[in-house]
Image (cartoon, rainbow, N blue to C red; front, side, top):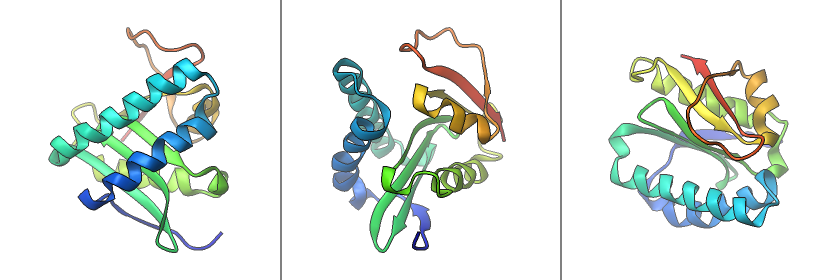
Length: 152
């Protein structure tokens, strides 16, 4: 894999992210049309939230040869609400690098002193390898989703 660079998402990246993230959700996360629509709306809503509240987020992108290859968004420095890596780069360390960089940026700024997330079924094992553990949740999650956390 060519070398990758992790850096903050910029306001000028929004149009690229709006096109890129739903495509990755469709390819890598779910094949359910209903769940795809819900997840896409959620992901784009989180992007809107970041635009309105950039000072309350850690939003990083991974770039290879100038092209977007991965992204992570942590709202309020504890709610890891988006982590996407282009499937072309899966299993090459990019997801781990994005999570680790986000965790470092959130350390000391998180009211929970942890990262929380709701892992999609295909991502549960990945997050477990990164040290995330199951946590209790009162939220109603889609089938197979698991509420998880990792201490900062």
